[in-house]
Structure formats: structure tokens, C-alpha cells
Length: 468
Length: 101
Image (cartoon, rainbow over all chains, first blue to last red; front, side, top):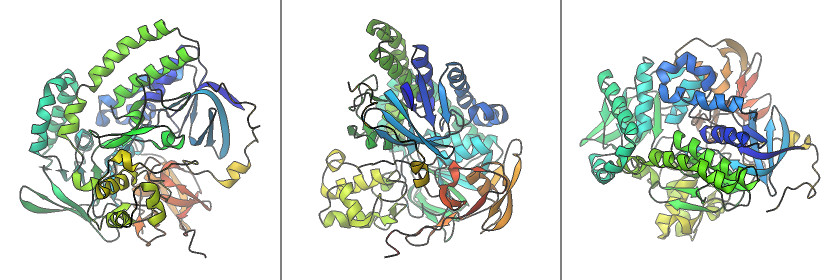
């Protein structure tokens, strides 16, 4: 049986920063992470890739190197390629690595599982060739693959970053189809003053737009009625913009309208979550150290609420300080003194968020899709199906499973959960909080019977850590 | 099923491995299996058990399960697997749990 003071799930910015900070305080730390190399999605494979493609991917990506190096020097046990599939009461983390299942007994657990792309159900989004913008970034980072004939669609700064990276790679996108409008920008203006505290983000955005203009990438803003055409794979994207119908032939459509916390792990342990109306997503309820409603479990980074990579690293450090204090490795005055500059930096990092949230809102028709659009990709349940369940008396997502299997496929609701909640809430005149979310049960990732059977039997009940 | 890839490789070329795709040898880039199949022009990766609709990688980060393939007889996410010499990979042959009743 492996034991650790702290198990951190996920080696993105929050997890890496937390691990280095916690180890620096004298805690034994283990970091299971699904990827072979640390970095998370934002810094995917950065140690290997930054020297190869750093000039295409940009400085923000290469900045991840420092976190990876700190992690390497911190004396932390990084478990690359470890897929966590259950977190049990008393701090037992179960995972599979190299085809073998294993457990760790942890005194504290930090969930640093990051973000998922916000589901963007539009007609045709299940066709091969339609991917998330994040998927394209991962392909570019890890594998040096750039789609040759792509249209980027949705809203948010990530689209500009991806488009600029594609320009630098010599393969510009055919067009950007942007769903935000001038009206959104005007609505965001009252927050511009606050955003100027985070001026670096605004300057970066303007710089990316300059690159796209120079490269002659067409931009269509205020786009609506998005749909992907194709029989066996994507062949074109259709939309309305500027009072005209458009159709652009393409082989790849990259969708993005923001990212949302990946709450599968925090949901699976029964932590309390609440709806964030500004960001249109659920997030776990945490205090300002990242402490969740479940004893001994913390959440940090985008998994606790979207703030971006730099904010995630700072939140990871704050959680690590609180955990070190909990476990007697740091006095409370020491913890508070060390956290003060982190909190100031965090406030500056988050200053531009209200502006960005309003200037680049989610594409509304994808929050409440038209009836014929598939919302549950796995079970091919449409928005109309879900509305029909509501008419038959379905008040929440867990009932929706019984009505028609929405959320019961292999992705366990990751790419339909928010949509199903929104449709039911809208149809029933209820709030998302009243409507609730899928109950997420372990295993939260696949584990084979063989892997389970080969696990060393762990004695039950006699090796739980302090129950708090 | 195998066409010209809609992806272009940038940066130093990855090493190659020969896997067995649908029973036939296929040379793909070493590294991430889903990326290697995409770069080789493989599409789709599977058909859905509900309607038989074609699917391919969507999220590339282990969340969506649309890139499911059968590796050595076990259904796995291609985006979470590494390509290796001789790896036997097929389109996922999923059967609905209620289909055999």
C-alpha cells in the first residue's frame, strides 16, 4: 500500500505548482496524471516540444517549462500515465498505470483536473472532422499536426491564439466564424477599466488579432445559425453573418466557446457544486484556499472555476499552503504571510475575466440547441428528446437517464451534462441549481475487470487516515 | 476509410512504426495513436452502437470517448494510447448492452 501526505490528481499548472509548494513545505506528494509527461493540456508535453515548436506555439506555452522544472526538482513522485478511476472515502485514490491498478492512501487530496471545452452542440457537431479547438492545440503541441483546411468557429480568445499558431505554422485557417457581436463588446465595456489591470491579456489579444489581419485570415463576427454539413465527415460549415448566408468548404471544423470546470472527480465524491451564472457552468463550492465541502479534499485551478493557467498555478500554491498548515508543517501565520503575495497576483490575473466573459459569451443557440441537434454524443439523444422528457415530467438530469440514456454513455456526461441541465431548467422554468446535474459514480475512467482482479486486496477499514 | 489526411505535419518528422489497422499493415507516426491515425488519413475510427454513425477524435484529451478503437481486443481511447510496432488496432465493435437480449 502506497501512502502520501498529499495526492494531487492532475499535473497541469495547478497540480504542478501545488506539488512543488507542498513538497517545499516537507510533505510527501504523489501526482498521478493521465499524460506521460507533466504539463496538463495547456502545457502538454512542454519539456519535449518547446525546443521543437516553441516559435509556433508562443511564449505563454514555453512559460510552462518553469513549472515542469520545479516539479522535477521538488522531490515529488510524478506518476505519468496514471488514470485515476476512483476516489474513496478516507482518502484512497485508485488508478491504473501501465495496465496495473493500484491505490494510494492520502491524508489530503487535491483535485487539479482542469477544464473541458464547453459543449458546443450545433447541427453536425458529431461528424468526423469536427473537433474542439483544444483538440487542435493538443495535436499541434504533442504531435506537430496542423489541420490544412480548417474553419474555427465560436467565441473566445483561444480561437485567436489557435488561429495565430496555425498562421505561424504556415497553415492559416480558412476563416474564423465568431459568434460574439459588437453588442457583446459594448456590454463588456463597463468592465474595461478593471480589465486594464490585466492589460497584458488585452495586449496579447490585440497582438494575435494583428497577426491574423496581416495573414489575411477572414473573420466573420456576429455569426449565427452555425451548422456543419457532411455525410460521413465534415465537408463545409454554414452560418449567417452580416445579413448573408455563408457556406465555407472545409475538412476540419474547430469549435470553441469557452471552457468549463471538469467536475467529474469532484462530483464523484459528492462535493457540493453551484451554478456560476456569469460563466454558465457548475463549479465545486470551495473556500479561498480551495477547500471543498468534502473532508480533506481540495480543488484548485480551472477545475474549481475558470481563471486560466497562471491563476491555476497560484490557486495550486494557495491550496498547498493550506494543506501544509492542516498537516502541521506550516504555522497559520506563516501560511498567511506566504499566501499574501499569491493572493495579490491572483487578483491581478483575474482582473480581465469579467471583461472577457461578457465580450466573448457562449454561443447561445448551443446552450439551448434546436430540437433536432444531438446533445448527448454517446447515446445520440437530441435536444428535442430532452425537452420531451421535460414534458413528461422529467425535472432533472438523473431522471433524463432513465427516460432516454442521456449521459449514460462512455463519456459519462462530460460533453452533454451542462446542456441537459440547461435544457431541463429552461423547459421547466427552474434554475440550473434546482435542476441539478448527473450523479457521477466511479469508475470515472475505464478500468478493466482484469486490472481490478489483479489488484492487491486492501484491508478495509483499518488503514484509513485521520477522519478529521 | 483511408484517404488523404486533412492534417499536415510541422516541425521535425516523428519516427514511424508499422501497426496493424483493420488487419492490414499501416505505417504511422510514432507517438500518440489517435494523432498517428489522423495523420495517416484514417477516418472514421468507429461507428456508434446507437445509429451506426461514423465518429472520429473530438477532444484529444481522454474526455469524449469518440476515438474509441479496439487495441488487442480491448476497447480503448486512441487519444490515450501510444502507437507501437505491430500494435493491432481495429475500429471499435461496440455492442449495446441491451442488443443481445
